[in-house]
Image (tube, rainbow, N blue to C red):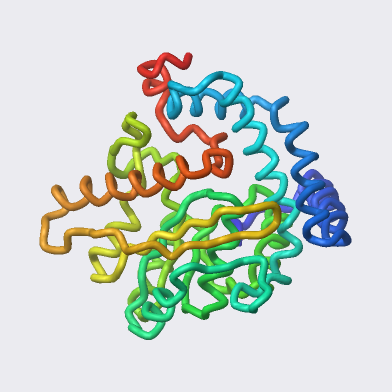
Length: 304
């Protein structure tokens, strides 16, 4: 859960508004809610300062595309984020392994192998499509897994989000930071898996190229996989409307016989290459609004 803090009037007002928002979409069928969320944020997102960040990132990553193409991708990205938010109250309705499920899982046998091994794995992924569906696929197989998350600034809203995740099966979560890191180590020591996002801005870690420009990338997932001699297991998901296809990809090599100074940069480069390949497949389904690259990369790319 979020770090303990005093509950203020602002927290309560925000939580009241968030509750109304979730109830509004919960009363709709999921397809209608998803469409409504897309329409809502596709209109509002481009008015925000984050839209400028998204366009700069798109110019850096796709220098040979037209500005109109980039604007279209950015608007489609906002629509996808709107869908993800509006779909949240419906996540407990999704059963990934039911025959008529709106979530299909490719290579699910790899999840079975991880579960049966008793050793776990380090799952990594990025903010693709509705990124909440990847934990659904893992938890419902079921693979014992502790999943990291970034707590909402408002602890009341954070509790609501955690409750939704518990209802679809993701009951083992820890906040990021020192406490969360200790929780991940304990989970792996018990033979469980852990799951982390590996595509966000990170001020430390290892520098590696992404779309031809270096950025700092978290090395924690690779270090954990190497330390416990378990697979570094990437996953991804794509959407078509409010239907989804998740893929459990081939594990990424971590070079267990090599020293960290050699293995970590090579492994992180593979992680970024995996992320870039998935983004190129559906650029409108990635989260372009965070500052993944340092300002100097924007300067070098001529986007400022």
